[in-house]
Length: 559
Image (cartoon, rainbow, N blue to C red; front, side, top):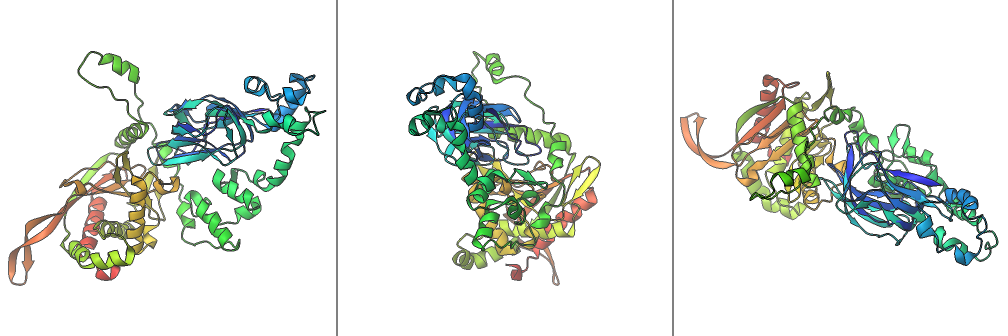
C-alpha cells in the first residue's frame, strides 16, 4: 500500500524545512531507516531516514523547496500494499518477463508490483527544527538505493548533514529539488521496493504465482529486523533518532534494553555516542550522573511560545518587479540568513532589552595567556586565548546568580538546574551558536578544548543538533574584529547575553599605598544585554560585576 512520507517535526519551534537533496529518485528501492534525503532548518542540517521500506513512487517536494511540517513530501509503496493491490491491478498477467517493465509508469498510480511504493518525508531532526534545505540529491529517479545508503544532503542555518535512505529499492520520484526549503513531514520522494522490478524475474521458482511473491518477499526482511521494527520513535516519553534505532536493530538491541541505556542528549535522549559506548562497554549501562539532570527543566516549550516571528509580506518576485529597471540587485536571502533575521526580530519583539556596560581590566588574563601559551599548546595541542577565561568566569558567575540562568515561559520562570553556555561563532555562512554543555561541571581545560572543538565544527558546518540547542546563556565576542563596544541581541529563550569587546592598552589611574599612579593596563568593555521581564537592573549589574571580578582576579590554579 502507498504510504505518505511527511515532513517531520524536528523540534518544538520548527515549523518548516528546506529540502537540500534527495538521495533517492522515483522508482528507487529504499529500506526503512535508509537515508532518503537531506533537509536544512534554522537549527541543523540532517540526513533523513525513510520511515518505510518499499519503492519511492513520487516526490512531492523538490530540492530547495521550503516545506511545512507534516506536509506530504513523498509517497512510498511498501511491500504489503503492493501484494494487496496486485490481484486487482494485474490478475491475469503472470509471466515473469512482463513484470519488470510496467513499474516505473504504473507505480505512482497502482501498488500492483512487488515491493510497492513508499513515500519519504522530511524527517524530524530535532525539537526546534521545522524545515530544511535540500543541498544535493545523491540519487536520481531510476537509481537503485540501499537501506541506510546516503540518499541526499540537507542544510540548515546550523549544520549540513547526509540523509540515509530508510528503504532499499529504486528512487521513482523526487518531489523536492536541490535548493528547495521543505517543511518537516512533507513528502520529498517516493521509493519503489527493490522487489518491484526484480522479484518475479529474479525468482524463477515462484513464477507460477507472481502475485503472491511480493507478500512473501518482505517476510525474511521483517524477521531479520524484528528488533528494529519493535523500537518505536518514541517510547515512555523518550525520542529515539533513526540512527539510534538503526544501530539498535543491527546490534539486536531490544526496545526494553534500549530503554535502559542512559542518554546524555537533550531531554535524556540516547545519542549515537551513548549507544556506541554501551556496546563498547559490553552492553553494560554505565552513564555519567551529570548529564541526566540536563534534560529535567521543561525548557523546550519556551522557543515555541516566543515563535511569532513576522513573515515577509511580499514574495521575492514581487520585490524584483518593484525594483525592475533600477540600479539595484535583488538578492533573495538564503535559508540561514532568513532564519537569523526571523530569530533576531522575534527576540527584540519578545524581550524588552536592557543594557549594562562594564569596564574590565584584562591585564591579569593576558599575562596568564602569555605565560602559559607555549606549555598549553604543547600539552593540549591548541592555542590558548582569552575566550576560555571568559567562558569559565561566566560559568562561575551563573552559579552565583541562578536567575540569569533561566528563561521565561508565559508568566512562569524556568530556572535551569544546569549551565549550558552558547558561544557565538562567525562563519562564512552566518552566525552560529554552538552550546557548551554542563560548563559548571567542567574545569578550565575542558572548557577550552570543547570550545575550540565546537568553533571548528561550526565553521566546517559539522555541528550536530544536540550541539546547537538548549543553551541557558550566550557569550559573543565581537572584539575579535576590533570593536570596542556593542549591544548584542538576546539569544532566545535565554534572558541574557554577554558581549565582549576588543582589549586595548590604555592609561589607567591605579590606587596604591603610595598614592594614585598612572599605569598602562589592558582594558576592554563588556556589555550585558538582559531581558527586563525577569532581570532587573540590580541583578543584571551584580552579575556583570561578578564576571568582571573573576576575570580581574583569575586564579592561576584554575588553569
